[in-house]
Image 1 (cartoon, rainbow, N blue to C red):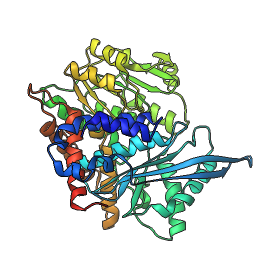
Image 2 (tube, rainbow, N blue to C red):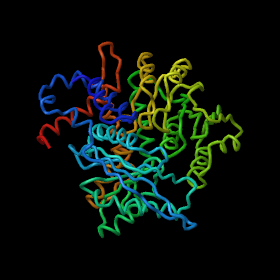
Image 3 (tube, helix red, strand yellow):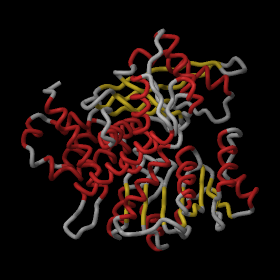
Image 4 (cartoon, one colour):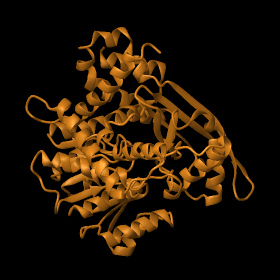
Amino acid sequence: MKAIEVLEDLKRRFPHEQEYHQAVFEVLESIEEVYNQHPEFEKANLIERLCIPDRIFSFRVTWVDDKGNTHTNMGYRIQHCNAIGPYKGGVRFHSSVSPSILKFLAFEQTFKNSLTTLPMGGAKGGSDFNPKGKSATEVMRFCQAFISELWRHIGPDTDVPAGDIGVGGREVGYMFGMYKKLTREFTGTFTGKGLTFGGSLIRPEATGYGNVYFLLEMLKTKGIDIKGKRCLVSGSGNVAQYTCEKLIEMGAIPVTLSDSNGYIYDPEGITTEKLEYVKELKELYRGRISEYAETYGCKYVANARPWGEKGDIALPCATQNEINGEEAKALVANGVIAISEGANMPSTPEAIEVFQQAKLLYAPGKASNAGGVSVSGLEMTQNSERISWSTEEVDSKLKWIMQNIHENCVKYGTEADGYVNYVKGANIAGFIKVARAMMSQGII
């Protein structure tokens, strides 16, 4: 197998899907040497079967707004691979949603879920519906219309959706309620549910917390203490908020947050009190991060990202491809020693190359942001057993999973000079488990 040849074939068959091509090539480039050590993989055409999703559902979603006007959006579900467990992955509501975005996310999810040690396959879904500016009733109607089409294709042992960008506890609740009505069953088909109907403690916090737990493991390899380190965080949603919360708890100093309109830089640091303001601003009022700058009198830069500011650690927690090559160079020049991704694929290939050439501690999202889906998997377990674990139990299991992911990255990613290539380590560790499962199950 030659990674570039496989990529060129996928580009020919699926043109204009740049995000999907990017995600596939990153993995193939990392696993090429290991893959070619197993001729049985090539004989079974394993690589093509791994790259192309098992199935793709696309459908129209029609809903009515509060004024009685009818709207139509597209809905999708990509079921990528269920070799090691039922399909598992989030649902994203955002205007940027397209088959390419969801195929890349489902592909990444397959290997991320493999890394967690839990029996979960990979999937992703969503719609180009944008919940911003919509009333709760309009969001509810849309969620119900979305699930009225999707419900036939999901289930606790088939495909278990969760939240993602634009889909929080409210949206999951609406979708679960409609699913329950249509199936007349109460099962753990969704994760990220409310605590009163099967949700897990610390599920909202899990991606952000796990991101910091992975960062701590990386820093340990260099004997670096996180206390006092100034952290550049992007985003201001769930992942960014709980990344900041754990950073503050560990004694670090987050100094930036952002949204689609710009970023804030608070040289005094984002404290627990200020973070509570952000949570309220974003969750209750759906406000803009610029309001933080107005309230606390700090710097705000419109239509920009925070990667030009000085800091010790960068934690991109917004969206894909938010750090390009030039921004990566700025981070290196400003003395950043570690990057831990809370978002999915936030660094471009050019940015990753810059980080690795500088020998920085760099954690790809499929490893460092796996905490969210890990606790989703723990929620599935609790639902299956009809039990509920304490915060301490779930947090302890999350820490163990993130430590285990880090160990596997070091095992497969340590290079001759001692540098840990976490991209290579995560990709190989995730791939090997899925590949062995697929080979054991025959050609299907």
